[in-house]
Length: 572
Image 1 (tube, helix red, strand yellow):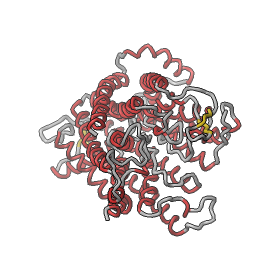
Image 2 (cartoon, helix red, strand yellow; image 1 turned 180 degrees about the horizontal axis):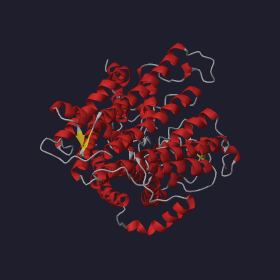
Image 3 (cartoon, one colour; image 1 turned 45 degrees about the vertical axis):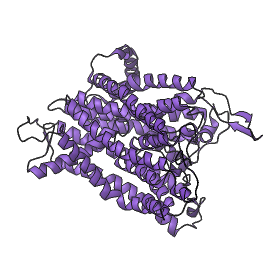
Image 4 (cartoon, helix red, strand yellow; image 1 turned 180 degrees about the vertical axis):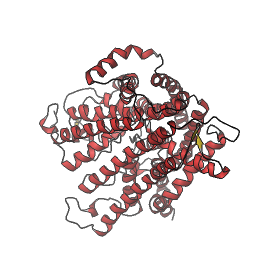
């Protein structure tokens, strides 16, 4: 067990060793300073020229959001039709069928919004061509979209007063050329040399030890798995995701992809502090996020190493911990670390089955997605955190009887209203979506649908409620992981989560960027003796308290009905 715990510690420390200098590099890239990757400028210039873009044209926050939403709509329409007609396109050696309209609707929205919630099984649901021109393509551009939006947010606070917030397309292109492509190439090589497939051949066939003939899917998986983790996307090439021995062959690849999915979210926090010339603020934000992560990680690891109480009552030895749904290649400790990382960050990949984890682990996984700001996704993590920060600034201002200020700009009614709406959005989507699904399951279970609602769940008790709650929470957090006991490939779940995905992605991006743009345009107020400084330990603790209180009030009843009720039932 000590060896497993050392593996967690070593993985986290290696993550920081890479993420901190990466953050310094990103701050220079987006500030337009000289960096070693400047040799890529001719390629970027060619992209701008071919696209008719003037990268030096300054935009305000509204123009940035218009560009972001427009290009995402183009990708959505394009991908929707490719998925429906993929069976008629080339590079389909396994003869995979085209998707139904409702499944295509859900899938394309999911990949456009960086969620990759898969209601299909990876290797049998899409073709090699679709994996490339839709899935992998969107993994790059959806991640770059989130990073570009975060840089707009950075720009609003770099200068004392400004409505000129740079050019969206320049931030977007640089996110790909200077960050995602180089790192993906390195990581794909590591995966390929460790056994991840890179072939365009169809399924291979072998005879198992039991004498059965087994058809094994393969394909050019290494490249997709690299950007899947670096871009906090999470959609697996194979249906079993990173629990599949070809997608994640050994402990080395397991460590590499764990590090990969954390480095950009952490680096963006470091880059923020450097970019706005408030390094201490960046470290305070990082500290709050890290405390939040460990408060979820420690009980998760303890829960999984402690084993299943029901099995213990039967006298069954669990010396290695709770192994149901775990890969023996990895064990429960590093699987618990992965489950924490993948839910606090919007990756959503899995190296074990979350549906089989202990009830309290399920509660921490859900809570990580509900908070959605302990590191979070690429770029959007710090945007989500900013909403809590503005609420904390407002409450602190009221407590000391001063007009709230953030980095020299007054926080007034308009900004607080936007923050309040975004704060209420997630609980509304999660709780309302789960309520709709629960009502249909309990009141219309025998409805004459292609998939009857009563057949959605393998576990109709407390755990079944957790499965539905998890699905909607994962969609709202743009996470993509799931409790796989839920039968989700049907019209209700495809449409319901499709709309939750759209709203849960774009409003939490638009809201923080709008607040930043409005604050950045205001007159700068120099600091005085009475100024509330956000880069202090006290204010960091205040922000953490806001996160805890808001999420406890919003989600405790739902968690009590699901994983907490299951836990206490198991103790009987």
